[in-house]
Amino acid sequence: MKITEIRSIALRGATHDHGWPGGTDPNVQYNTLVEVRADEGLTGIGSCYTTRALVEGSLELLRPHLVGETGLEPERVSEKLRQSMFWLGRGGSVEHTISGIDIALWDLFGKALGQPVSRLLGGNYRDRIKPYASMLFEEPGLLREKLVEQIERGFRAIKMGWRPFGRVSRAYDELLVRTARDTVGPDVELMVDAGGSEQFWPHSVSWARETAKMLGEYGVTWFEEALSPDDVEGFRELRQSSPVLIATGEVLTRRQSFQPFITSRALDIIQPDLTKCGGLSEGRRLGWMAYDHGVLLVPHGWNTGVGVAADLALTAALPVARWVEFQTGVPYVEELVQPRFALDAEGMLRVPEGPGLGIDLNPEAVEKYSR
Image (cartoon, rainbow, N blue to C red; front, top):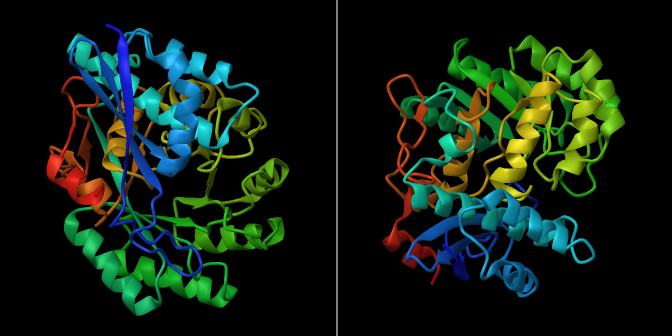
């Protein structure tokens, strides 16, 4: 089975507010799908967290190394792409594009063999995993309403992030967290994302240490992106004193970027985004490296339904995995693929069992959001 073509599909018209200053125009284009086609009539689907212009620019470099390759060796082929780009893009948008290609190659491989990707990644340690509803912080009244919405949908874990948290005052941070805990009660897991990858993040370890103590008083499960994303030593110092789990990694690409965080035990949870970090192949390497050092892997999932399906496949195939991220009310997640994701009575998501990623693109949604 030989690869014959790759094409990109830009998503726009329903881009969710990312919490960045100024909000987000729904027509801003951040997510790009890729389709890898083979000569036997099969197509693999992937997702990249970068713009179509950057994906197409990267494909100009990558196509000569991809077309004509086998569709049955996703890990080797994606590593070939990465190694071939040594002088042209170690990380960044080239790696984001390789990520989408890699996901599509695994989907194609699974379809060719009639097997789910989770099994091909090594086997299913579980058939369900707990999703956490991922949302932005709001002022207390609106925050309460949005939390109730997630509980009514059946979520048993919720993450809040960005916007006013860490940007107004310590007292206001605590008010937000107290409001959340009072609203959801003691049995729902809460996570907090400070958003330290935002431009010119001002806080140091001292702020993060005191904030972590406050979060511990409210039973928060983990504290995410408390510091700038490359501050390995800062994260290591924070983790030594934090009463809650420390997490980061959503902006990192390639396993080499994660390695110092893992091997120096600078965090409790790594959060690679499979649509950025190198895809499922790189995610699997990271998962086992993390496991060998007592670190959890929780994929960052602020992207598309294709990304969620990849996250479920990876977490099913890791010996220790507890959560996947799920953006609620986001069309690129909830409308783009079929069958749609649905929580069971215990607030869990079932790992797809069909060939490949176990999902297909919804043609009506693709038409609507790629016009």
